[in-house]
Image (cartoon, rainbow, N blue to C red; front, side, top):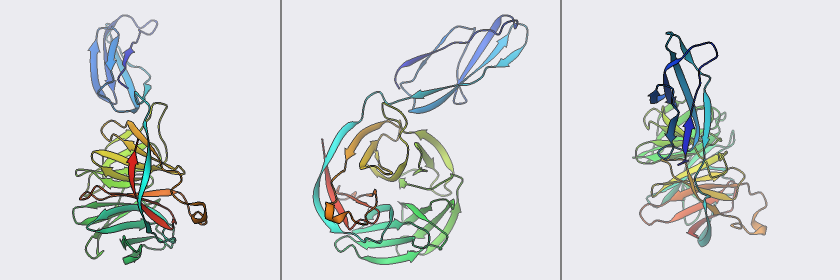
Amino acid sequence: MGATVTLSAKARDGAGAIDSLRWTVNGKWLKTTTGDDVAWNTSNQTTGTHRIEAVVYYTSGQRETLLPATVLLLAPQAPKPYTYRIIQAYPHDRKAYTQGLLFDDGFLYESTGLEGQSTLRKVNLQTGVPVQVIDLPKNMFGEGLALVDDKLIQLTWQNQVAFVYQKSDFKLLKRIDYQIREGWGLTYDGTHLLMTDGTATLYFLDKEFLTEVRRIEVCDNKGTVDQLNELEYINGELWANVYFSDHILRIDPKTGIVLGKIDMSGLLKDNEKAGANVLNGIAYDEKTGKIYVTGKNWPKLFEISVMQ
């Protein structure tokens, strides 16, 4: 990403001379030439796969669409390495298979997963005890969670259904069917919902109907970054858990570039790991700047400080 890519095409044998070439990138017009090479500057592009197409117009009046090509744009530099310091540890419900996590007005809000065990809960930070819980239908697998104004939006894994609740009392306001194949992480940037589906794709969704507005692929300097999971929007960055990884990624949501990689290994002590699953769950308190992390079936939740 940032490099200039040279695009060229030549006439098919026997087709005659080229009158003009019309180039498009991801379906959008780039440039029309008389056959000369085109310099495509990628500095304003996002990371990920881009589709290049060319339509050739011949002086004979014939027209031909060339087979499309794809270009994978990567981050121009490696992610900055970060580590952490534990500020404080809090109890966390070992039975909570944490899928989505957020913080608001002094409480944690948590979406938990597994069919027959999925819940939405409001949790006392100091004690780890839920003060309000509702169960999802038995056939639903809870996933990512986001707060939009005074509403909580909870994804499901493979049901392609989202539930919208009134935050104050968990009253179900509506359910929304969405088209993305799986629900994983969810957060809100103040304009759009940002969603993952277990791949490297980051979806930007309309907050009312969860319809797709656009999408980008998240990349570091080596390739696409798959299995993006729980999300949190923090000061213009997107923080993401990666399934089966002890790292949290810091992503530029405008470009898809992985800016940083926080090594979160060692949070749990050896005697706390029995029954614990993977790292998953990031919550941010906008009022204090505090950041909280936990995992699926973890006995603790941690306030952390990130360091280089």
